[in-house]
Length: 194
Image 1 (cartoon, helix red, strand yellow):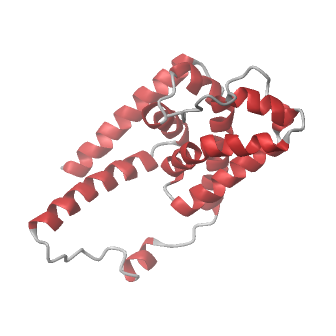
Image 2: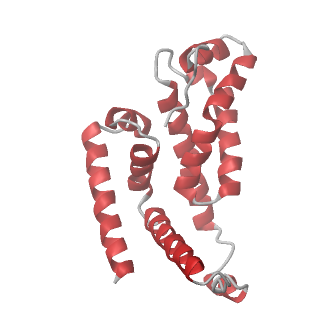
């Protein structure tokens, strides 16, 4: 969801100022969009530290590519498009360079059960955590085009038109991606529950 800009200049006005050489206009843009960008990237890649790093890369790109911003265009669409590309590039990089095998993770205690003395309360928390993890895992294994559309729609509350502009496709294509994403999630989560 877009942050509330208050009574200050719009994001589009700040971009116009940035394009005309007023470097200080980047600071309010970063203040308004830092958390939504980090949240969006995290939901795509599932790693907090990487989301922090990539968010900084997004703002660096906004600054260095400020000349390519089309005056009159919605800033959030342009910003999320850059963020989606950064996440996609990072995921490709990880795919080519895996760093930790499942066996190494297990041997390091990654699958150790929580043996909290709180009993039933701990069990309820564990079940809730497990369900959240199942949804996060199901979202994480969606193809990137479906995942990106789903995250923008469900978590960033963007319209079909905004998502289409961000992804460079039609609103109908976004609708199809959302449908396919939901179907895959439903199928994956049914398997997990059974």
